[in-house]
Image (cartoon, rainbow, N blue to C red):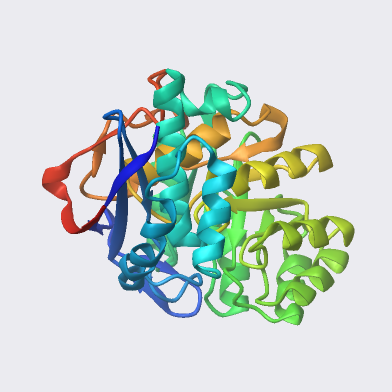
Length: 366
């Protein structure tokens, strides 16, 4: 089996809420998604999707992804998509960095691998170990009354894992969590996501003031060393996200005992091939993971959901249903959500089919 062509599509995903806001004054209502379709000489087509969370969250720019894919196309056309390690090596030879663009191709290759084998991708990634994956829902940064209303709504929908965006003045965030904390149920997991906004003294002041409230602190500071300092002195467990951008970063964090949990965003690490290695390293080290991505619709959600579903339950902190954060869908057949959990079908590959009426064709490479 060989890749004969690669088609690149884009689409605008409108956030279903008022605004997706987080620390640093960052706020977005529309996200640009990029979908890759790899067609093979035996008639199978595989799909991958990546969608940066705006231009100021991660080292990826949506409008630049088609240009990266134009460079990568000659490196993968003519190759066997089932040989995922070889495909990644060809991409690295053609283009340094730009993991998010490479992730779109890598995910499409895994979709093809599953379809060619007649198996769901989770089987190929290790088997179905977490069939009903716990979901977290994000409470965006807003007026405290709006945030409380979101929290109550998600709880009524069955979500027991809540990620609360922080980023007001530290004193205001302390008061916010103190107020919301009165609503916390014993079976709920709360994560305070600072998105790298605080200095270490601010993070420690927050943790000391709220030591009686059970909450994880996610990426309290911008720098790795700052987060490590907070991890060693805080009253709460620390989860890392933005500080981790490669397997080497994860290995360093494990050596330094820098984290109690981590966020594994599949596109940031270059796709499923590399994310699987990082997942397995963390499983062995006893580090629970939120397995997710920065943003996306049904294809992106399906990709990380297959990785999450093949993760031992003890190592899967949670995942999320990003396709339900948007007002429209780019694919059908995606993961199903019920009572705060997500379930995959047993269809081959990722199990999703794009809705081409919702996509704009950018270019076809042959």
